[in-house]
Length: 109
Image (cartoon, rainbow, N blue to C red; front, side, top):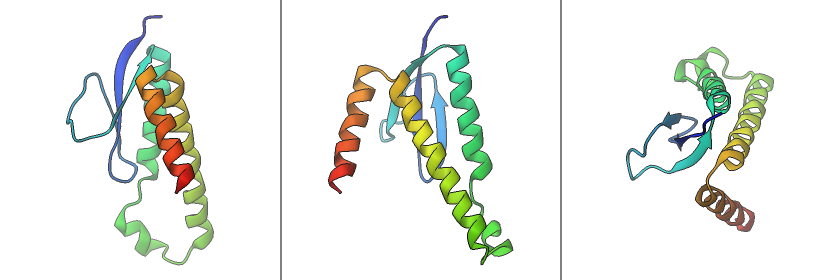
C-alpha cells in the first residue's frame, strides 16, 4: 500500500488532531508515514481520546466516585502510551529522534 505523510498534533490536554500538511508552526506536530489501514488506527485512537475527554459537568455528576476517576486515568494513560508508540513506529527519522529526546528529558525529570 502507498504510504502518505500525516502530522499528528497533540494540543492542550488530550486534544489530538491529524493533518495532511503542517499547520500552525507554534504547535508540536509529529510527522508519520502511514497507509490507509494505519491512518485508520490513528483515527480510532483519536476517537477514543475524544470519547474520554472530561467535560466540567461530569465532575459535578460524580465528584466523589474515586474508582471511576482512577479507571479513567488508567485508560487515558494506556491510550497516551499507545499513541506515542504508534507515532514512534510510523514516524519519520526526525520524529523518532524527537521522541527519543523527549524520553531522555522525561527520564531526567
